[in-house]
Amino acid sequence: MGANWAGLLIAVVGVAGTLGAALLTQNRADRTKRMELRAAAEQRHEERGHAEELLRAEQARQEQRESLERRRTCYITLNTASRQYLTSMTNYLYALQRGEDVDTSLKELEACRLAYRDSYAESQMVVPDTVLRSSGTAKKRLNSAYGKLRKYGAAPTTYADELAALEGELHDEVWPYLGALKQSMRADLGVAE
Image (cartoon, rainbow, N blue to C red; front, side, top):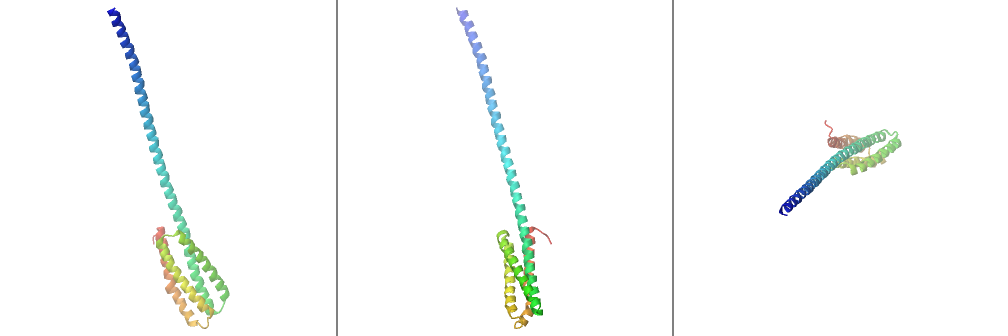
């Protein structure tokens, strides 16, 4: 019986070895598959993170372009309105001095003043502080000149000397501030001289 037991023992060890090898192989295959799946998930996560980063960068560039275009449009409107406002003041001044087309010039002046006011109000919501400071200074000069012009325009014969001096004041005291405003807007847009 010893030989039978030895044969049986050898057979059991052989079957156990065969089954153990199959289980060990399956276990390693499962482990390898889990590692592959984990690596693939990490790769997808990294790719998704990179794609999201690229998307955020593109959105930031798009927002910058839109902001620049919004400021550019605002600057064009503000520059045009302020220059037309000052030109209308000059035209009204000449009309007062000549005594011709005063009402027409005044209506044009008021229309230009309202257009300037609207463009200035819009600029307060769009432009950076550096441009806003230049814009505020120009606005003060324009409003001061407008106040004097309206005061003198109410009685042009009484204020004939003041009206004559106002022309020089418009050119010496207001135009330079509009030029400084234009320069600050151009600098903000990156426009070189």
